[in-house]
Amino acid sequence: MLPTTAAAALVVTATGATVAESSAALTFEVSGQQTALARTEQAADDATTSDLASRRQASAMQTAALQGRVEAKQRAARSAARKAAAEAAARAKAEREGKRWVRAIKTGTLTSGFGPRWGKTHDGLDVGAPTGTPLYAMSRGTVILSDNVFSFGNKIEIRYWDGTVSWYGHLSRRDVQTGDTVMPGDQVGLVGNTGHSFGSHLHIEIHPTGGDNPINPAPWLRKHGIMVG
Image (cartoon, rainbow, N blue to C red; front, side):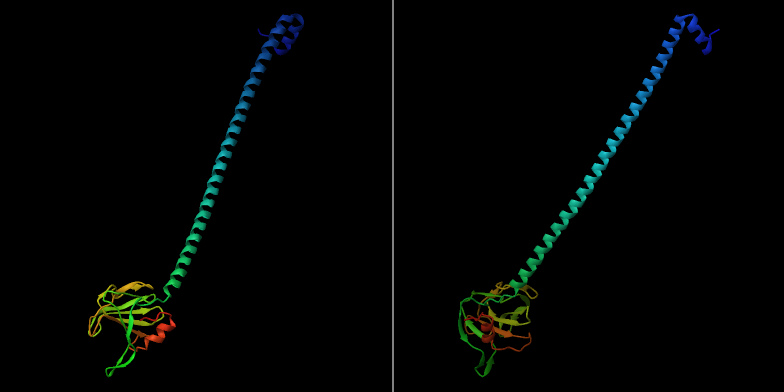
């Protein structure tokens, strides 16, 4: 029969060798448990450290992604603001450019003025120029007529941004169609000798309110700095 713990203590007194062997076994067993416990704790520490590192990395990635989205939105906002400013500047420039006034014809000689002529009223100015001389829109506007009209021959009417309508008559060619938008200096046709005409020239009329109410073009053209002939 194996001795109990108390008996083993007695054996220690009587036989030292037996006591020495029991102590060594007990020490080995405790050391093994401590090592296993230490390894378990180390593994737990390693797992905790790894988990914390993974969490930190994930958090850093989320922060970077969020920062990237914020910066992308800021860049997009700045780009949109620049684009809007550029578009506004372009519109303002187009508005300014569109309200310039230029001559209907760059070269020519005034051959007939506004007023009584041959027992009737001559409603415009005649500017003599060679057939094929270019004619231009005087400002921004819309072509409200481009057609062949009896007595006027090839005729173009343009309503400008301020409501004034100009008539060009006797053209050899029309380069715009009814409904077209024109800007200052756009070519609209060529001087000619069509309709009721006795020589190559531009017949130009000014109708300030758009109706059939012509005024003497000369003062109006001078006021706008674009007198012809």
